[in-house]
Amino acid sequence: MTPTFLKVLFIVVGLFIAYKLIFSGKKGLTIFEMHFKDGKLKSHKGKIPEKFQKDCRAIAKAEKLTCSVRCEKLSGAVRLHVSANVRDGITQRIRNLFPFEYYDKKQVDNSRQAG
Image (tube, rainbow, N blue to C red; front, side, top):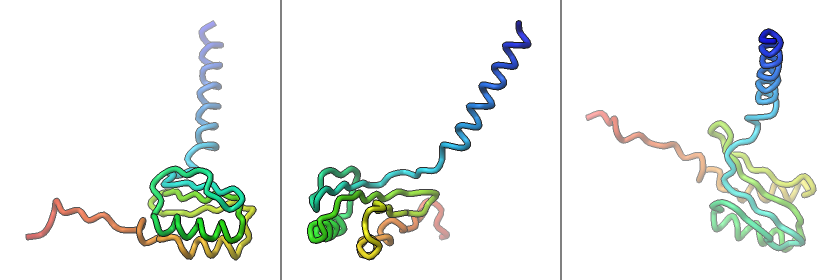
């Protein structure tokens, strides 16, 4: 009975580890998310730079967009995702408005300054 139980336990642990390796770690930390429907901002989460939000709302209103715009931080780099149903030209306009430099600031460690 014990050898059978250990074999089953080993298989279950192996499947769990394989599942975690395959299906986890692909998404980063979501900084903000905006959802538009028919050119109007329906919902948002996170801290969105004010100027970027205002400009995105203007583009969405002019183009009557139904989409989502999401910003996430993945291994130190900031990525901006726009729904696939948005034309490439509009996606590029949104990317051009995004303040990447706001998120790419390096943290300065003041605790060990040379004197």
